[in-house]
Length: 387
Image (cartoon, rainbow, N blue to C red):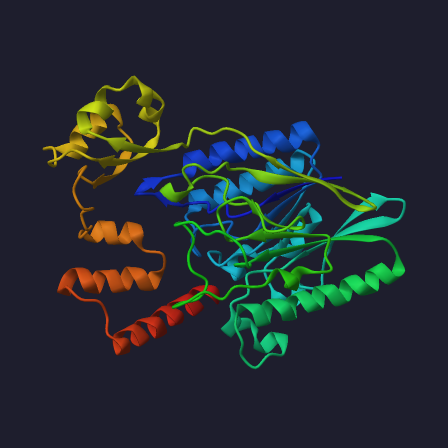
């Protein structure tokens, strides 16, 4: 049996103000083609199907078309909700869709309700797909009196593990668990939204022990935290920190004895990023940069003085240049002071708010102001999660 582990499609996302729906549609075309050509039996999507809780109509239509085409190509699809998704909206009509081969897991009550696939010789594959677990919303349902991401993930996984133990007592079962979380040892990028305001709540890999494979989502770089715990990463680069990453998915070969193979796979798209550095005139003339002419570019100029109309001139050769920085050679690195630069460097919503305060008044938030911001951001995040 062949399984494709994907995640973080973020349908509807923009890149530095440019819509990415055409690039995402191109990637989905490649996904459907890969599934059909390689006889893929199941496609896993480990959260963040959409980029927003309220996706636009054309974004919903793109997902609808992709799911229909994947099923027509011969695959069943297992989708769990991520922190960017509205679990309620994504889970609409889940019972009806399940009859057509699309299995949506958006509620904590489904933690011990695996999607089952026959493996032959009486063996089964059980896929336990956990939705994104917002601690303050799901802790009561899990019988917890508070706790962070680690506590709620342990409790949800324990439910899946208990169901798996019963099934294994009755026959041969190979297990996959899907989760959308920040696991220990994972390398983040600039394009992920922080899962906890004011700090990180990292889930240890030991939480996933007892399962043959953990298909994780949330981090956008494809990476293996262990042989059996992996992030597929996002299908496209969503920040310049991902410019040199290989994008795609993990292809799993599964048999009655377990996970037989795991290999990285991918397919080309027109969405490309380039990091350029040099003097303006050199960048405009050097034929070595020809490949960047059709890519989204982050350009760092090292001229001794800032050239006039720098971005305008850069775009005469690199029309998709979206970010421009100045670092004169031989001079101390210039401090970025523009608000747009602060937004680019921000790693969380709290960073954005703090950067805005520092930009407009010359100093960051006080302790009391930081606490108020954290409280306000938590309220907004909880409202989104429960929408």
